[in-house]
Image (cartoon, rainbow, N blue to C red; front, side, top):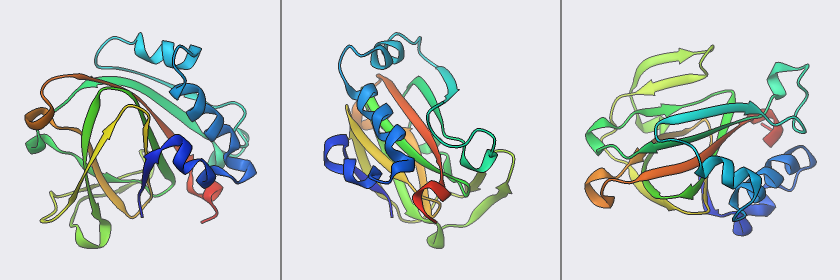
Length: 178
């Protein structure tokens, strides 16, 4: 059940008090010339920075830690797609600059290639026979739940070579109430 849209259009999705710091971070990242946006847009290509959102979750409880991975990278071709899901975390991805394609499929329709790795919170899948394509661009947010097999960073063939600047907020699924 992926959710996709501009942050202003899906802000209500983060209405629960536990998710307010996530919404605040997304709004800050999407604001032009904010310290958060400036930091991400200054990143060199193919780098990432991971940090905890201090105001979010109970950092004494590892099951409620929220963190962001700010990153920049070049697009890859669809033949290099890496299909994945996560069980403990929901991916909330926001594009600051650039654009990318995502492939999206239901885990029910996909074959597991590498079983769940609890340490990495990762299941890897074979390329699905059928998938949807999402086109994300500046200030678009995509929320991927545990049943959403997704592969991002794609579009080299269609969108040409460019750098994507984004943040992926890893939110424990329990903060969404499931």
